[in-house]
Image (cartoon, rainbow, N blue to C red; front, top):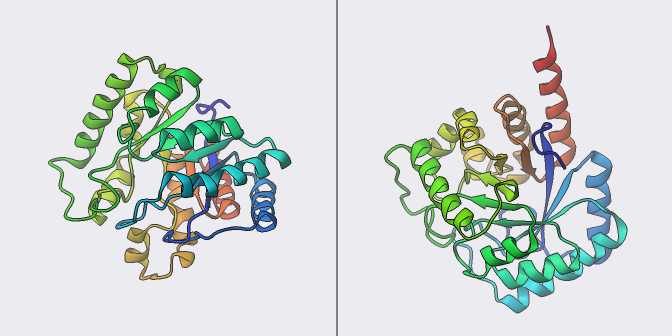
Length: 269
């Protein structure tokens, strides 16, 4: 997959009972149905997660997380060859997920929480999504502060990347996520969206994970995350002009439509 060839759609499949939006223990039949719908809609990557990272979320044991994600990955891999991303901060979960058929590690901690995560990524030579987060899910929204949110995030990402490269990670493996909603206020999130193209200056593909998040609900007065897909699609369309490589979303169909329209407008004479 050439991430520099345009925008790619990552569909979210949360296998958690406490996700802020679409979590739940999915039966094999329901999971297969949801995956088929995403594939039909034009998804490029499927993102599987077994531990909620919403603000205030509680930690999940290794055993519980494995029980949630590994059977799901095997089910998906038996039915389609769409690339799978494993959303986890635990190296053992990532290792077993890769063995089961996953292709990408999506680590909200930026490879920092588990000391075995970076060596695993280096040894497997697979893409890793390095996300910026201030704090941890349990406390990240307790008064996050930045001197300059864009420059601070860029500097921290550069520091983490430098460390990862020094330990053997290849530049071609790196995908960056500025971390919308992870230790960010409403104004921080809006500033990130306004200056998305600046993160391209770091030299790596950019992933945007904005789907159904609270700041959209705050602006639109939509308390129910399920009613935030229109706002999500608008942001997705705007992100196209900023050179974002991956849009991580719940509603693949509306995002594909938004991207098509944005591309058509950008090509108009």
